[in-house]
Amino acid sequence: MSEDLLKQIADCIQRGKVNAASPYPPDMKGEDGADELTRKALDDGVPPNDILEKALMIGMGNVGHLFSENKVFVPDLLMAAKAMSAAMAHLEPFFSSGEAKHRGVFVIGTVQGDLHDIGKNLVCMVMEGGGWKVIDLGVDVSPEKFVEAVKKNPGCVVGLSALLTTTMVNMEKTVTMLREADPAIRVIVGGAPLTQEFADKIGADAYSPDPQGALDFLAQSA
Amino acid sequence: MAVMTGIERIGNLLRRKPVDRIGVFEHFWGDTHKKWADEGHIQEDESFEDHFGLDLNLCWPFNLVAKTDFKPEVVEETEETVLTRDGNGALLRTHKLHEGTPEHVDFLVKDQAGWEEHIKPFLKPTRNRIGFEAYRDVKRLAAEHDRFFCWSGVNVFELMHPVCGHQYMLMGAATDPDWVRDMVQTYSQLTLDLQETLFAEEGYPDGIWYYEDMGFKGRPFISLDMYRELIQPAHTATVGYAHSKGLPVVMHSCGMIAPLVPGIVEAGVDCLQVIEVKAGMDLLQLYEDYGDRLSLMGGIDVRTLYTNNREVIDRELEGKIPVVKGKNGYILHSDHSIPNQVEYESYRYFVEKGLELGTY
Image (cartoon, rainbow over all chains, first blue to last red; front, side, top):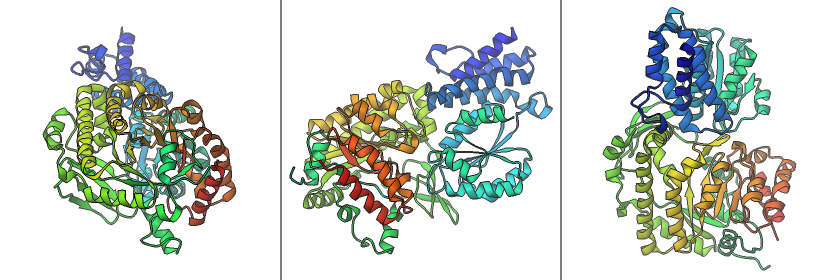
């Protein structure tokens, strides 16, 4: 029974069905969404961590992979993230009590000099959906601010984003300072002008052309 | 073939008719001119069009912000950034030390109600939205130099997101398509009404140029189905109007938009620009798939110019120009714009080599 409910929640996340009032997607109009079904699962006694791992992460993972394959697009990803947030709101108290556990902490920001945030925000959504606690430092983030966040969150992973060729050079400085602060830190980079070659050159651990790639890298390297 | 003027050459290239050589045009970041002027390569008051013999002049004469008399309010200022609210009610953070797209911090419009309250009532085709004098001046300048003159401006996708941001616009496209349709229809009609007024008084340009960024790294923002349902009607209407006046249409989009190209061709666009390689666009593939129906401008990886290495630039040009000039529909342009990391001599070489390869 709970397996069916978890699958329903995962479907709602994947298809962006937020709640019963939401008209989207049109073929699910009037049906319960991620909001109501997550509440129901908790009321039925489904362990919060099962909801996280067997519903939310599955649903967001599915939509993330479809996005990587250009089978769904930004509106679909945004709606999936909205549905996930509605579900996650019910789980929040259980992270403090330890009944639900994040996979780790992911610190992310757009590097200094760069004010673009769409790509970064999509990564935040997919990482949260993948079970990570996301600390979003915003845009135009100095290397010092990244270092400060890493010191406050030992063992975290860092994501650096840049859209401009003129600001991607600031990534190298940020990676260098992060390594000085914590030689074991893992750093993932992404953004329009970046390539694997550039990521290798500046000493990043991974380059991902899309949000799901960052999540997959962390799953493989865990 | 005798040497053609810019007007003749671009006019033919946009219609895929024989020319003497490929065309040439470019966009530059603002600080590139200053650097090259400081180095003594170009005069402070000299245009790139004059200096490099570019084939086009563009003029962007419309102001489509909702409240045209609104003076941007500075909400917060630091040493490096300034946060302002603009005439669309958007809070934007811009960097003071270099150019770039501003950060979209917040919007008054997040749904149809906000659109109807804050924006739609103000979008009237009033004369104060038109820069008559600027249009007249650039039109005359282009004619004096035999350059192809384009009215330029943004189309509906680029008009909506400054009002409500990409995220609200794209979620609205999913959850409330009627709202997005209303914005699309309102902006396309406003554009056409203003064009009617301007062209009736000042005469027609040689062509129309729409900026319409619909993609980012690796993918478009929306699917081809959603494009056809929500955006294409405006493209069909605005391109159709231009064609009814005998004007070819160039459409610019940054990012990876290859999945949308069938819809863009259906809408009647004559030339696709800028074909951003680093986002995943492939000039040679586009040429193979659409070269008989669509002229192409750009698609030369600007990162090869950053190297300031002539061998690297040669490889990029030699791999593309001899192929894409085949159907008389190619205009030389980088795949975005030229930043000041590109040395003057490198860009000069890029133009000379590109046109040498592109001569018939």
